[in-house]
Length: 93
Image (cartoon, rainbow, N blue to C red; front, side, top):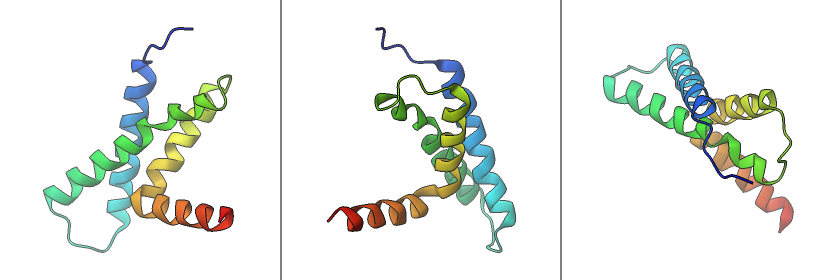
């Protein structure tokens, strides 16, 4: 089994994540600066690009499902993921 990076998926997931982050900013009521816009795009893109980690547990997962997970991660953002992980840890403990 080769451990090669699928640059096409990585790039597409990153762009999709950045667009989701920017879309969320367009919906927000806060005053936007270039720093906020660029930061949100970078964080959302980074979160979306981590979606292939799921392949560790589900190696035969279709790429469509990977994109769905990438979109979910980008939509949740760091705050949403923190809440989700906190709730999951609370159920386990």
